[in-house]
Image (cartoon, rainbow, N blue to C red; front, side):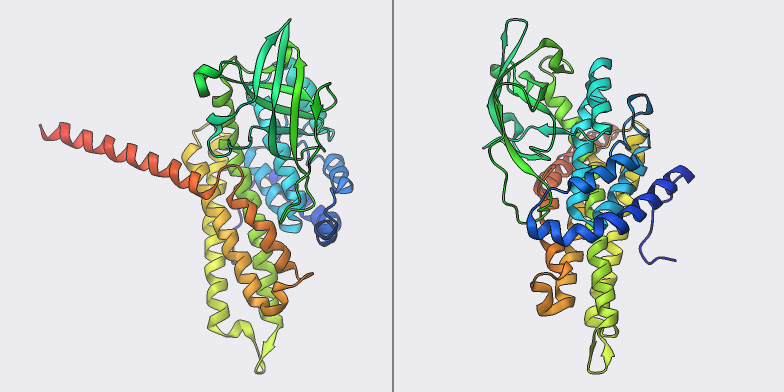
Amino acid sequence: MSVIWEPPLSPEGQRWRELARKLSAESFAPLAEELDREQRYPWESVEVLVESGLAGLFIGTEYGGQGASFDVVCAVIEEVSRACASTGAILTAYALGGTPVVLAGTEQQRSRYLGALAKGQAVSFALTEEGAGSDAARIKTTAVREGDGWRIRGEKIFIGNGGASQHYVVFALTDPEAGTRGMTAFMVDKDADGVVIDRLEDKMGIRGTNTSNLKLDTVVGADAMLGELNRGMKLAMLTLNAGRITVAAQSIGVGLAGYDVASREAARRETFGTPIIDNQGISFPLADVATRLTAARMITHRAACTYQEGGDVSILGAMAKLDASEAAHRAVDTAVQVYGGAGYCKPCPAERLYRDQRILEIYEGTSEIQRLVLGRAIKAEALKAESVNAGAAK
C-alpha cells in the first residue's frame, strides 16, 4: 500500500494512467534534464502525446479525441508532470486552450479546432496582457467590426505553448465602455496576416515549454467569434475554473516527483553510520509532505469529479489549485533540504524541480487570487447565515 493516497479510477481510467506511467518512464523522464538545460521545446514528446492519444484525452471521440472523463485527464497530467514538468505543462496547456472551444464553440469550430488539437495542432489561451494579469478587466486588446468580420488589435503576453500552437483563443474588448461585460473571445490562427510572435520568455522553470507574446493587428471573419458577443469574460472564468483543477493535478505530479527524490535520497544517504531518514529531522518533514500531497490529491480528485458531473467548481477548483501548488512547494523545498548542498546545484533533480514548481503558485490564478475567491465565498456564506439567524430570531 502506497503511503500517498491514489485516486480510484474506472478500469478504462486505470489503463490510461498505466499508459501515461509507461510513456513517462520511457520517453518523458529521460528528457527532463536535457530540456531544462537546453531550454528546448520537446517536439519528440509532443509526438508521443499525439500518437498515444494523450494529447486528445479530454476531447470527445466525435472530434478525434479519446473522450476520457475529467478525473482521468487529471490523473494522466499528474503522471506526465511527475516525470517531466515541462511535458506536463504542455499537456495542461492543451486542455486550457481547448476548454473554451469545448464550452462555447459551434459545431464547425469544434470539428476544426478540437480535431486539429487531437492531432497535435495546439490551441493556446490568450488572455493576459501587460498590466492585466490577475485583473483581467484591464485588458486593452480591442475587436472592432470591419466589413463582415472583426479587426483585432493588441498584444498578449505569457502565452503557454506560444509559438508552438497553431491557433489562439484571443479575448478582446468589443465594447470598451462596458468593461468585463464588453469582452468577446475569438479564434485566431498563427499564420494569419498581422499576427506576430517575436518574444519567447527566458524562464526560471518549465524551461522545455514555450511562453510567448502575441501581437495582433489582424482581421478575422464573423465565424471566428467564440461564444456570444460580449460574453467573453464569463467564458474566460469558466475556462479558468477547469484550468485550476488541471494545474492542481500538474502540481501534485511535480510534488510527487519532489517527494520521490527526497525519500529515496534520505533512505540511501548515510550520516554517522545510519540512513538520514532514521533521523526525525528528516522523516518528520517527509511525513508532512506525504500528508499534504494526499490531502491535496483528494481535493483535486473531488474537484475533477464534480466538474465531470457538471457541478460548480469555482470554490473546489480554487481550493485544489491553492492547496496542491503549495503542497508541491513544500515537497520540492524538502527535497532540496534533504540533498543539502547537492540540492542547490545542477544537475540535481531537486534543484530543477524547485524551479519548475514555482510557476504553479502563479499561473491560472495566483495563490493570493485563490484566497481572495475563497475569502469572498466565506463572507457571502457567513452573511447569508447571519441573515437567516436574524430572521429566525424575529
